[in-house]
Every structure is written in C-alpha cells, then in structure tokens.
Length: 303
Image 1 (spheres, rainbow, N blue to C red):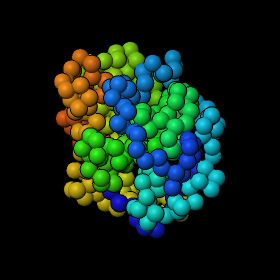
Image 2 (cartoon, rainbow, N blue to C red):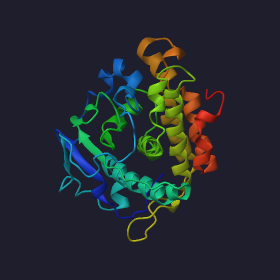
Image 3 (cartoon, rainbow, N blue to C red):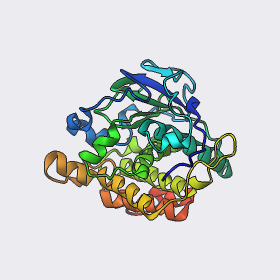
C-alpha cells in the first residue's frame, strides 16, 4: 500500500535506539540467519513469559527505556509520504501514524480509549523492558513498557530467507500486527497467550491470529487515515498489495518456519499459527473491516 506523497510524517510516535538508529543506521547481515532457535516463540509476536500479570496497556508511556532515545534528529529524513515510499524506516513510521490514527478513532466506538504506543526503531540491538531487542529476534510488542520494537533490516531477511515479497504492504502488515498486540493489551486479552502457550488451537495461536485479523481490519480502513493537517495518508489498496500482505503472512507461519528451521512440522509446538491460518485471518479482518470479526476465541477451530 503506497502513501500519498504529500502526507506528513509524525516522528514523535517513534524513538531511535541501538547502534545506529534512524534512517541510514541499518545493520546489514545477521538478522534471521542467527534466529532459528528463538523464532518459534518470538517471531513476529510476543514472549508469553514476559507478559505482565494484569495487562492494562500503555505502561510507562512516554518514558525512554534503556537503549532507546527520543528521536531528535534521527528521523529528519522522514518528512512526507514520498519519503515513506522510498525508505523502509520512513515507511515504518508513517505506518505507525496510520495504524494509531485508525485505532484512536475506532476503539472509542467500543467503549475503550486508545492509549498511544511508541515504536522503537533501532539498529542492531537495544534494550526493552522485556529483554534485549535485536535483529536476531525480529519485531515484537513488549507489554511491560507498551512499545513496539522493530529493526528495519528485518524486512530484507523476511524476503530473502522466508519468501515474503518486497511489497510495501508486506512490511506494513508487520507493523499493524504488532499494534494488534497493543490493542489486545488495552482490551485485556493479551494474557490469554500465557495461559495456553502452545499447540495449533492454543491461546497463543489464537492471540497471534487475532493480531493478524486486526491488521487486516486496519488495512481495509487505512485509506481513511489522515495526518494532523487532514491529508490522507494512504492510497487505495490494490490486488498486488493484498498479495504482498499474504506473502508476509505465509512467510511467518509456524509450519513454514519449522520446515525451514528443523525440516519437519510439529503442530503441537505452534505458537503463531500456520501460514494458511495467518493468511485466512488477515483476510477475515480485511474483508469485514470490523474488529468484531477478529474474535479467534469464539470459534471451535482457528486452523
């Protein structure tokens, strides 16, 4: 999904961190190639062992955690949608803007206030309240500090190692998925992953598939999100955009990851869901455009 060139980027919703931080500080190499053991629990999601006992959302909002700094001049290259269409880092930031604009307006319709969450856009490694974020862990949401952690070099690995295409919505899907976890935190649903942490029908898998579905809901409505000057952020979705998002969803399915990591598929160890289920739940959210369609705990089977 492309951005409108005149859309304005709000860099106050991100922080820089790690060895470089910000555009131009990308670490090349490493990443998913050192990831195999940790992927099963951490890939594109959360570590259930780090969940707070009573997730309320927005913990420590606005505070700078060790390893992260307020953006300062780190993101000066990110000003407009035109920049986001050319740069992975700027694309992450404007996607954060769009996702948060949508949920801040949508969630009150369900009687809940949306609490903004910063993204720490780092290079190499940085510290979160859930432990070290690194390009070997991949993007994740930390419910303890209420922040999303992303190293933009991950996107290249997602394509070259696991088969996602390099389209914009493949990357934007990752961001929207992590903010789906933040939404779950606000709604008090995130702890269900910890209660039932593994298996094809487990609470962990249902939590992850719900976040995929919430990402689809955002994608359906993203064309209506705006910057603080009223400019539309996103161009309408195309069929190629949807294919791009689905390629990312397939790439991060537990069966795909296990097949590449260990040469066999073991559904009893799944924590995020199969490629097919991840695609299907993203499409469920996209086709409905409605949060209510994403209740993965209300169905007998999610796979």
